[in-house]
Length: 71
Image (cartoon, rainbow, N blue to C red; front, side, top):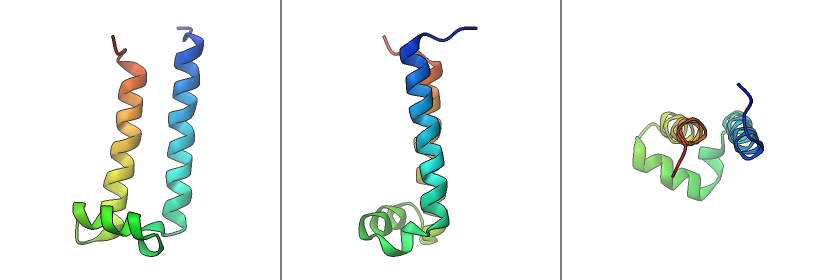
């Protein structure tokens, strides 16, 4: 199946976000960046788990948008 150019570009953007999320995870961003600390605390008292949930949700939503066309 050949993807249209805009879909390919969007999927590349989602994959870049996934790679960026892994980079932020390895840098323990939820411990040092106040907005990340705040947001992860809204999800769970375990900020590391909250960070994983937020970023996984972001990437999964992006993949859903790439697969399910918005009309």
